[in-house]
Length: 235
Image (cartoon, one colour):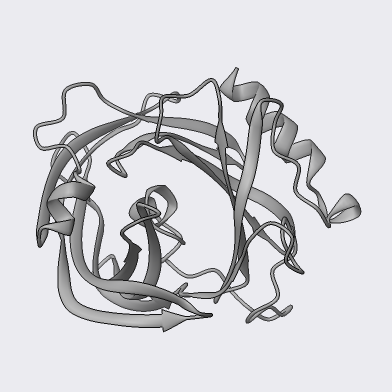
């Protein structure tokens, strides 16, 4: 069923018919977020999922490129990369599962493993911690976090290493990206996909599929478009 959802979105939200996001049958969109870095995300929930599960569909100028589901602890459940289509899931029984409740108390350490349907596997360790600072973005009050994580392959080779700041909304139980650094082959790259607009049902721009901030033909992809941002965090 999840592949059907991904294919539905990939085929139904291209630039030719872009404009208004339509969640799959049995699902309801509740928030649209326009972010820096030329990305817009539509967040939705589905009645068939566990209570607290949330989906996010990410769009750039070319259309949808990523789809993910988290649970009520912001623990990753599954995700789909759409070009090419690859499904990635959280392995059962993580050594230290992500816990939003622990983060709200100050700090959450995590240790889990991931599997892709193409056979690739990886191991992720790291932490999220509150900094004690709050920010208001588009009228929404967010708490700032700091984070660091390392992703390795089964042989222990580092695939990704990142650190920086993000934002959370305690009541929404959601993460949003902030200014970060991403290590690619020993070189650090800055990335900032911070939210700019929060758009709720009935407001102009709700369910948009075209990003509006920092877009342009010369804009290039950065290494920040990677694992943890794609999963719980905003790319």
